[in-house]
Image 1 (cartoon, rainbow, N blue to C red):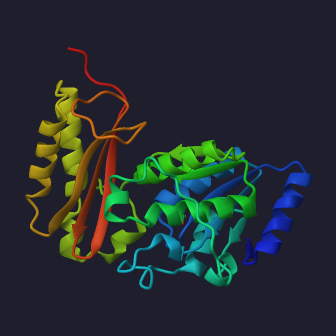
Image 2: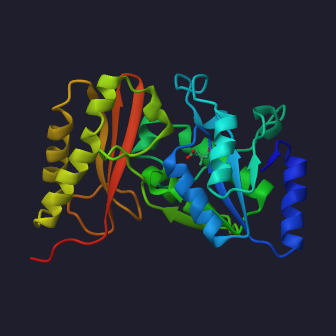
Length: 285
Ligand code: PAF
């Protein structure tokens, strides 16, 4: 496994790959890898000659009172897991390498970023798109792999790629869940045992929503109410949002009309978990 920490070396490596006709698949991460990330690495390994995984806890996507300092940093283990899953290169720059002195350029996708996580974390997506654009410029991948758990992030990055004519194909990959349904996330490790036990409620609420929709319910208010009432059965859960939006525009909708995104953010203590369900079809009466 090759570990690269400078932008100059990464540029040279990627140029060499292209000169030799090798396709690069890219998996951007903030480390603390879990099975969700590893599924992205495997998908990239299956479709590309070379798989590059970036491990960079990106300061610009964390708000002032968020968990930047305590975000888990486990580079040795991440390197091992990436190698086992088929990665060829780890790109692990420092923050100073990525954002030199007097850094001043940011990318802001103006639609899609106002609601859901953008409402609770107003500077988050600007940080994500900025770092992902920089990483795309540094790595020059043919394909890049993102998990659907971060459905809004995936939509925002796809929009940036389309609007800025970037020549990378964005590949969405399914949510990977624990056996009890909790969507995998690096932040799950912050949960206390009691919070972890209650955290399965996100999946239970989404499953109940799916059952309602399959039975023919299309009224978004009724579905939202059902989800909220299920989430509220857990005393350690505080709802940040329950939203039902058009999956193309991220505008709130009153009637389910595929493609629809049902998205949740729920706090357990200081740990904020997100999960979602994408409705691609509704039951015909
Ligand atoms: O999803 C993440 O882990 C991060 O937002 C990303 C895409 C690696 C950018 O820092």
